[in-house]
Figure 1 (cartoon, rainbow, N blue to C red):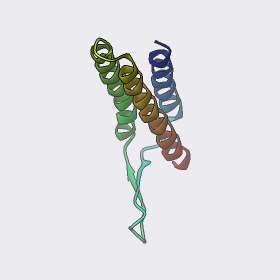
Figure 2: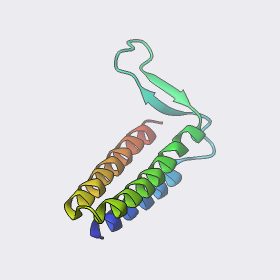
Figure 3: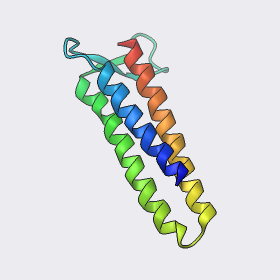
Length: 104
């Protein structure tokens, strides 16, 4: 249950930080970085593409919660592993979204 609470907190943190960093005055944001492109490694896009991070966080939370509840009846430790993998995905999404929004 603690891992699920952590995942809810990370999802809310991801949503709040993403929404707070988005600004209506900016028309484009950096949404991709491609290391193999030498001239223009940064790809810009609209703010609607960054809302995908919020949607991703919600999907990870729902999917891993439902999956862990279904697996819990079979094996308790495996359910904890599923929730831990969801925590890892949410932390990575938080880091990547923060890195892209800092660059603007």
